[in-house]
Length: 285
Image (cartoon, rainbow, N blue to C red; front, side, top):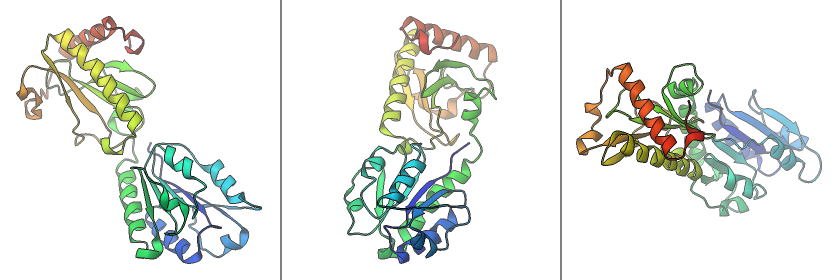
């Protein structure tokens, strides 16, 4: 199941016009996990979404403490409306995309990272805010049901696994370009490779490299191919396969009806090659 967008709002640090633009934009994100904190007077000035958790805060930085407690470091979109830079380190480390809602004069505008987008709804009437929310909400709606790959990982659907670790798995595709064609798939659902964080991408590539090396040995191939396509299943996956020439990269040539016994044999061959390469701890029995 895909977790919804995370929205954290410090009502004490944004003015009422900006907060009203934010609430209007959140109408397009009915499934969002919204937490609002602030002084009672600030909270009463806004008609918050019915599904929001509204937390009265007291004392200096009371709202910050409540929001920090509510924050979850999960690979999902984070909309942070705080109006200041107190969460600078949090947003820099957040594993998913971040939208920072504030004013052009506050410190949060100075944060710079590829996954962070600052916006001031007062400058464009909330247009960028609405567009960002709509894009992330549409992705969540497309993926509200666990993907096929997540069901395979969970054991709901059989799979010929050749690799398992804490961050990803690899199993043979049922439409191989060549015998031994495997898919390297993160355990956590990420749609596109451009949405994945750097550490996850590096890990997936490292695993694909080990599988490719084993494919060359196990199947006697001169090279190993690597492709990221993503049109088949909305769950990031790397195709790793033994290859003899450029025609092996043409998915029109994939075997759509392979012999199950041949798939089993190819999985055994790849597992054995991975074990011989020293990866026995990651190879399922």
